[in-house]
Image 1 (cartoon, rainbow, N blue to C red):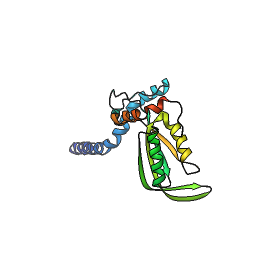
Image 2: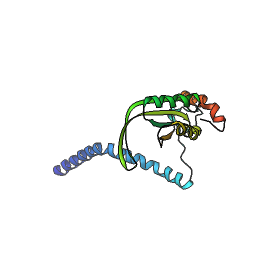
Image 3: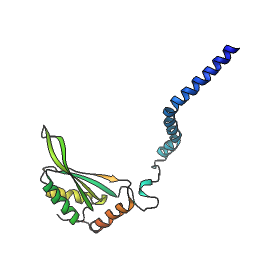
Image 4: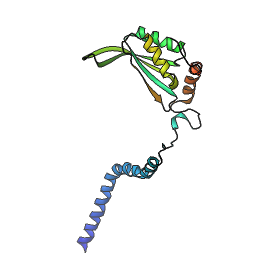
Length: 178
């Protein structure tokens, strides 16, 4: 009986030790499994899940994705500053950050190229991205200008509101001339 008791105690201690070791691994998996019924219901209904956006502030009125961060590369700081100033003056952007001395490695006309460039990070309304793209293409020295934009889902509400205010006059008009 003593051997059986010792075995039972040892087995209990071993299972406790294993539970401490495996708990951090299994907990995230278990929590995801708890969300599975909601995900399946969402997929079945065809509607996206509704989740609050904590960083944008509850009840802030910001529509996720209505502001975008657009990225443009330029061959040097002079060109980047000229384009940045023009897009801000034309209210196509509220703000442009210039990030100097990036290295770009890319394939162009069948050859691998490496260049030092300046990256422009442009904050604008998502609805203005087509006009911004057209303007950049019209003044950019590259044969194919890089203009890509990502929607801003969350952020500091007063800043996002400011982006809208600064670019509002352009979003109200239908065309923007270079």
